[in-house]
Length: 356
Image (cartoon, rainbow, N blue to C red; front, side, top):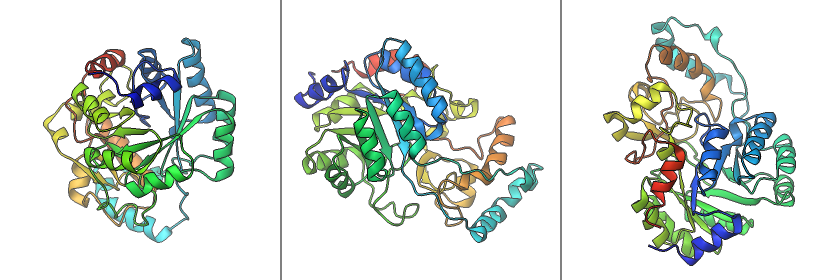
């Protein structure tokens, strides 16, 4: 198969050899992953939402020292929730039996802000680092911050989970839309619907969403979700994608920082069963079904608003993982783990490009 005109134009603008993008994976990667992918001719990404400005500077510096490798910096655009003591108390009550089982105290909970949305400090870093791409999840930041990104010379991408979201993003002038199918691992990029955690009935599969978005907008469309091998990449490009973004496929790579319990789960029969859940962060995200999801229900009104749900779960997760259990861990994974293998990231990129 030969690359489409859309794919060739897309890669040429970024100086890439391949229309492939490694999805930013907060908590599962550092600079090594992005450097390996970009070094193989695709586009490596960094999860800016989980990194301090200094960590971002260090990571991008590593890529630049590796020969000026291109990079995508990804950020979240959520609104930090107001304090809700009643909801937090109900959440702790739901988790109390697990705390007692593991001999933990609620005093171990840290009430930090969790993931921060894109703000002035992140914009400062973008202006200094001048990445090739800045991508956003959960919509777009305020206009003044977005303008700072554009002035820094970066392309602006953002995730859409519906045609309406894609059209809204295109109207805001994004350079590319990431069409995120419901099969994708990790957080849904939902931002227009009011229900967030509960309103998931609007979500489509990648191969249904992709051609509709391609027809609805006049900017490049990147396919994401459920694509795990060269055949899937080729199929997405035939449906009009300018490029393909993959995350789950990279989770077992040597460069990934995926935990031991997560690696075991990805290679087990359990990985065949994933579900959207709001338990771990407060927003719907796809992961391997584990004990917490089975016993509390994958989607629960008890979970505090994103991202504060994570605070009370952190001590449970840490204690369980020390004992070799992923009962309370967000085992993020897409519906298709067939391409998720313990190989170097550069080798995986080469295999994914085999049909191009």
